Length: 195
Image (cartoon, rainbow, N blue to C red; front, side):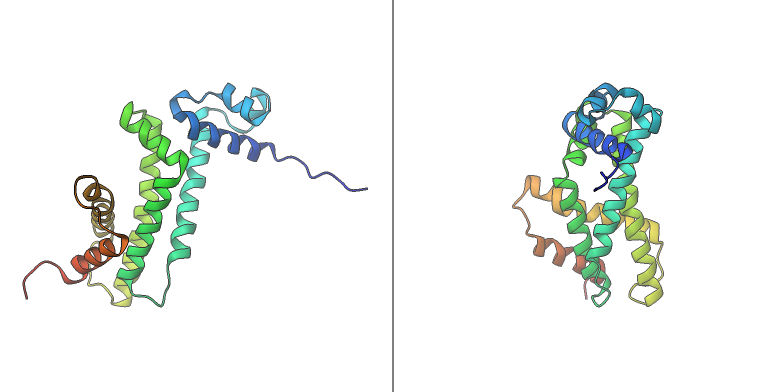
C-alpha cells in the first residue's frame, strides 16, 4: 500500500501568501485571504507565522535567495568582470520586471507608499547590491579592478545600469540590451576622460 506524502502546510501557506501579495499587494492582503487561498484555517497560519509581517518577510527572504541563485547562474568565471556584471544586472532587472510580486509591490510603493512594501523592495535591492559588492571585491582581488570602495562602487554600478535600462528608455529612443551593456562596460572600464 502506497503512503500519501504529508502536506507541507507551511509551504502551502507561503505559496498562498505569495499569490495573495502578488495579486492584491501587501496592504490588501489579510490573513483571512491567505487562509482561503491556502485552504487552511487562520489558526493554521498562526501556528507558523505570528503576524502578516512575519509571513511577508519569509516570502521576501525567498525572493532574495532566488535573485542570488539567478545571479550566480549567470556568472561565468571565464568571462571578464564587466561582461559578467552587465549580464547579471540584465537578468536581475528582467526578473524584477517580470516577477508578479515585485511588480505589485513596486506599484504599491509608487501609488500609496506602504511601509512594508517599501521595506520588501529595499531588501531585494540590498540583496542585489550585496551580490554586486561581492563581485567587485573579487574583481579587486583578481586585479581586474583597482582598489576601490566596493560598497560605493556596487551602488553606483547598480544605479547606473537601472538608469540606462529603465529611465533612459522611458524618455528617449530605447537602447537594446547590447547597447546598454556596451555603453555601461565602456564607461566603467574606460572612463570619460579624453585620451
